[in-house]
Length: 202
Length: 202
DNA sequence: TGCGGAACTTGACGGTGTCAAGTTCGATCT
DNA sequence: AGATCGAACTTGACACCGTCAAGTTCCGCA
Image (cartoon, rainbow over all chains, first blue to last red; front, side, top):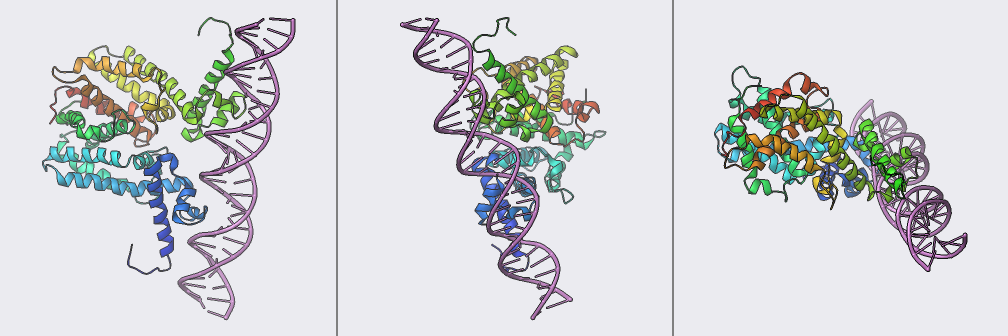
């Protein structure tokens, strides 16, 4: 896709990216149990052991997919935020809808991101790709943080609510995917956020 | 639990229960990827193919573990509810703490319950073991349902919030397990529920 | 020109789920 | 009582998986 001619390390980076893309495709076609090092290698047209030179085993591939997935995730929230009502409350609900929409569109990636290893295993020692997504949440929550309250609490209230609803949606609690967004159920759930910042801790 | 002597099918039921218990032990010792049909069989002292006569493959074993896990889950919420403050708001927060505590104590089971197949795959065609847990949530939420509002909305607001926080906790977002319950962070998050039922939908 | 090293291949190993064919043994029927 | 029938369980095989060790190829650099 790039116009640059293959330089010394181009094939290395090409294969790494190809493997990550193949992994995401596998993930979205057949769920998380269809994500396999050997199948990624086969799709990339290389031998079954080639991925070992780019990732630290299957866990490493998942970490790479999580990092790439977080970029997509951030874009979902950023674009949702830009499109809707620009009031503080409008932006808040927009990123919530973006969160759920990402889960509906890319449930497999979301499961990898919040998988067994947790966020701690993401890009070990490197730049935390989740920082960008969390920064959006932080910005949008800022207007709702009362004086004397930790911003972290408000952010976690919002995050927990939308993460929980999204995960329950993925688990099939609400019929067909996309349903909660279309039938207004999700907007009703978000009504809980109307009182954001006005609640005590007991 | 029944007083009946071992009848013709006693060994069958024994092995099935033994396998489920072995699976739960594996799960809690080594996480979800340590849960294996062959290891369950080895722990039960039977051949590697024996579990196939009691479960429909690995997915069937997970469904059985999820069903058993839901009973433990319900007990957590029921006992938490019985122990604390008996006011409506006290009961509400108690079952929330029970929910999180179950996640802290039995994260592996929770991952199986809300795993790939979702709740839909639980006890296919049989009694839904999750109905009991949801019934507790429903009862405790009832006092907070305003007139003209669907009870389902209130229940899902509470469920989403505590499920999300629990899952984020399992993903390692908040340091050591048990931390959120001890340091009061969870109680601050639950402050969002103080406004339950008073919020519009827009 | 030769060398060093990274990228990749080949082949093997143990572990996994699953299937097909046996074996065993208790319950039931005549 | 003796034959029979079926469920429970074993044995063995297969394909697939992640991973490791050794070999090969090939590019960049001294």
